[in-house]
Each structure stands twice: as C-alpha cells, then as structure tokens.
Amino acid sequence: MYFKAIGEEISRLQYAIELFTAAATRCGKPNLGGCADWNRRAERALTEAKKDNDFIYHERIPDVKQLTAIGRAPVVKPTPVPERFSPADPDLFAKLMPVHIHQAMAAFDVRRQELVGKEVNRLKEGTNLLNELLSSMNLPAALEDTTGGGVPASIQEKSAAVIQAGGVELLEKLMKELPEMLQRNTDLLQESQRLLREEKESDDKLREQYKDKWNRTPSEKLTVTFTTNANKYSSIITTAQQADAVVKEKFNAHLSGIRSLAGGEAAMNSSIPQGAAGAGGSAAGRLKSLMESVETLKAERAVIDSELRNTTVDMKTVFLSASASGNLNEPVLSTQHLDRAFSSLQAQVSESISSQERLIAEIQDLYQPFIQERGGSGSERENALKSLAQAHDAYMELKGNLEEGTKFYNDLTQLLVTFQNKVSDFTFARKTEKEELLKDMTNSFAGMSMDAPPAAPSHHNVSAPDPSRPPRKNEPPARPPPPTNVPTSAPQGAPNPYAGAPGPLPYPTQPGAMPMPYAPYTPMPGGYNPYSYPMQPNIQPYPQQPGYYPQGYPHQGYAPNPQYPYPPQGYPQPGYPQQPGYPQQPGYPPQQ
Image (cartoon, rainbow, N blue to C red; front, side, top):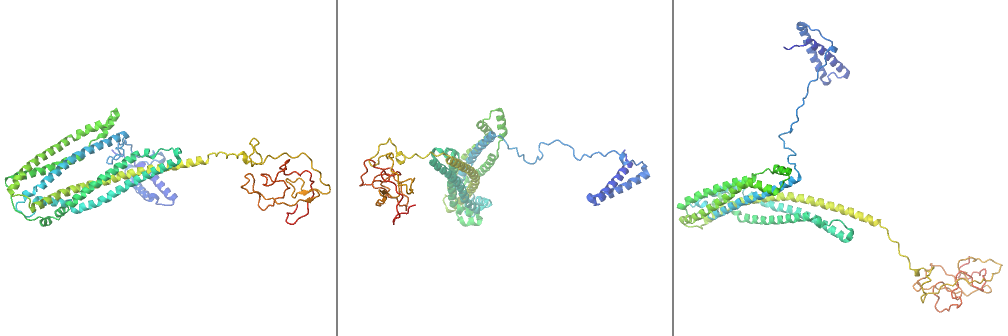
C-alpha cells in the first residue's frame, strides 16, 4: 500500500516557493529559467496538498530543517563497454596488418588474378572460335531462312542485343576516349622520365666538374628501380597502342554491319537481298538441336566466368596464423588454397572446351549435307546474313575490349601518377642534397688557407746583392767602401746650406768656388737596365760631377777612374771644398 507523506510534501512545497520567490527577487528577472512557471506549479500543488491534509490526513507539518536530504536521482547508470560502438560501420583497423603479411597478400592477389585471367581467356577464345565458325556457316540464320525473304529471327535477336548494349554510338564514344587516355598516360610517363634524366645530367655534370670532391652516390645507382619501372610502363603503353590499332581496324571493318544491326529491322531489310527458299532436309533438324546446345554452352560459360571472377579466398587469417607459428611460406600456401578454391572451376572450363570441340565436329559433319539439300551456298543473301552475324559478334567483342581498355588506361593513370609523385619526391630530395653539398663545398673553399707568395729571387734585390754569386759581364762591380781621407774644411765665413743632405750637392763646384759646366743627365731607357727604378715624372735630376755616374751601369763612351771608378754617392769629393752656393742661373731650379 502506498503511503503518502502529506505533511512532508507541504513542508517541501513551502520551502520551494520561498526559494523561487527569493530567486526571482534577487536576479531581477522574474521569469529567468522559467522561475515564474515553476512557482505557479508549486503554489497549485501546495494548495491541493493543504486541502487534502485538512480534510483527510491531518498530519503534522514538520520543520523543513528536520527533513532528510533528498537523494540523488540516477541520471545515468554504468554499462559495460561494447566491443564495437557502431557495429554497422566498417572497422577502420580491420585491414591493418604487418608489412610481411601485406606483401604476402599482394603476392597472393597477383597469383589469383593470373589464374582467373588465364581461365577466362580460355573461355573467351573458345567462344570466339565457335562464333566465327557458326558465322562462316551462316548458322543458325540459314536454318531459320526458309522463305528467302525478311530477317531471320536470330538476326533480329542480335540486332536487339546491339541496340540494348548502346549501338554504334557507344563504340564511337569509347573509341574517341582511347587516344585521350593514351596521351595522358604518355605525358605522365614522359614527365617522370624527364625528371630522372635531368637529375642524372646535373649529377654527372657536377661530378665531372668537381671530380673526387663530388662524393655523393651516383644517380644511376639510386634510380635502378625507377628506370626499370619506367621501361616496364613504356613497354605496356607500346603494347596498348598496338591493341588500340587492332581494335580500330576491326571496328572499321564491321562498321557498316553494326550500323545495320543498330538501325533495326527496317535497316536490315534494306541491306539483305532476297534469295531462294529452302528447308534443308533431314540435317536441318539435327543442326537446330546442335544450335540449342551451343546456346546452352554459352550460358554455362557465362556462369563459369562469373564464378571465376567472384571467387575469393580469405588468406589473411591463413598468413597470420602461419606467421605466428613461424611457417609463413607464401608461394606454397597460395598455391594450395588457389588449387582448393579454383580446381572445380578449372575442371568446368576444361569440360566446356571439350564439349565445344565435340559440337564443332558434329556441326561440320552435318553442314555439307544441309547445304546440298538446300541447293548450294554462296548467294548474296547468305553472305549478307553472314556479315550481320559477324558484325554482332564483332560488336560484342569490341564493346568488351573497349571497356577493358578504358579500365586499363584509368588504372594505369593511377599507377603513373603514383610513380610520378615518387620520382618528384626523389628528384626534390636530390636537388636539396645537391644544394647543401654545393654550399658546404663553397664554405670549405672560402675557409681554405692560401700559401704565402714565393720570395723574390736574390738578383731582384738591388740593395743586397748576393756576394756568393759571381758578377755577370754587364753587371757593375760592387761599390767600394767610403774613403778614409778627410776633406779640407770649407771657409768658416758662411754655413753650408746642404750640410747633412742625403745625396750629392745640387751643383758640382771647382776650386775657386766656380761652378762646373752644367751637363744634364739623360737617364737610360728602362728596358736597357733591368735593375733601375723609373724616376718620378716632372723632376729634373741634379747634375753630377764629371766621371761620376748614377748607380747602375756606366754610360757608354766614358772611361772610369782607375782608382775609384764609382765614387760613393753622398760623400764630398776629395780636394774640393764645399762652397756655400752659387747665385741663381736662368733655367736652373732655385736653391733652397
């Protein structure tokens, strides 16, 4: 039985109204957070509770301070963490696996694709051979053409198939897209090859320039994988170009027949001439039964083809368990599981090929009696029907080839884009390395210490000749030491203004204080005396005494003094007293 504490309810409602009123008063906004609404609800509940208490319960209303605290309501409750929060979404880490497992999976996929492609090609080759044989025999159109006019039912079915597949417009669209995709892939490959070539040429040029100082790894050693892949892609593109040429040639050969099939019954009636009627006799019944077997065989092959393409094997678990046990042998494991998964389908393909061979042999045996019963072959109508049948087969084959070619070029574009990105990253890294190496080499060259210049030969030093070297013929002898005799003192009347001068007096003098006749000095050519120094321009040399010559070779035509051939410069001559000077003469430089 539910017991209602009406007294406690009234006490709590009264306290709640007090709080609501205080909140509205203090905040200045009576309806903040719906306070006014909650206040009205509390007042209505309080009125009803008091009414019930006064007429029914008569409980004592306790003080609010004596009430127990209200317990916390469980807003949430703990639950176990699920293994996956979103089971419907794919697991982002489901395909994460170790590198060696990933490599093994990639190798297994290649083996699987090779096996599936081989079996599918066997089916396609068998079907194409069967279609060509039936088209050359005009079967089954010849069995249906009994009136000699109109369009046989099998040709009408082939026309409807061509129209439903997209007609000639689809083939033209696909044919137009192939050159664009081929050019796109070619440009991507050529750009990658250009980057590799320019990087190699730059490296070879710098290696030839700096020789052994250019010590980084040569480009041809680092680009072996890139070059191999580029050559592989180049051969793939060349093969694709050849396949495109074959497809284009086949399309042009059957274009008129495909247009007739795509045009419907009216277009085919205009292209098929009238011919003779004929049932074909008893062989026709058996050939019709064989044609039904042919259609059944094609349907079975379509199912086998679908199963081959859709069969998958979960090798991830196998490789992980083998890797954990340390027995991961990808070739053996892949071969075992591929044989286990595709052995039955391979047997069905082989059985289908064998059945086709038996059908072809029986059809060829019955074809000659059938033609003889019809009255011969080779009419224009028969050739037109053969052309339409061949056009249908060519259309289906071209459609499949063009769709595969489009997918091939798109996949190749992705591979070439990835390849170009890797080549670009490699060439950028090599360029950065080259710039850093050149910078280091430049800094090393700038900080290299240079050797001191070679010393001048001793014979270039005029002031200090080598006494050990014998004098040459044209070289003057060594200067003798200064004379020991003391010159006579000059008169004490006037001081010598040139006393202490570093060279000879500006004007030679004679006894009696008379100047000597002036004889201007003519210097020898610079090329004649290799040890002389050029004189300063616009400076008139002082005249010297007779018999005295400047330092260097003596003048030609003058005999030297046998006792002192070369008087030392800067010492007064013996026996000639120094005079105070001579008055200014016209044309001579003034005395200081």
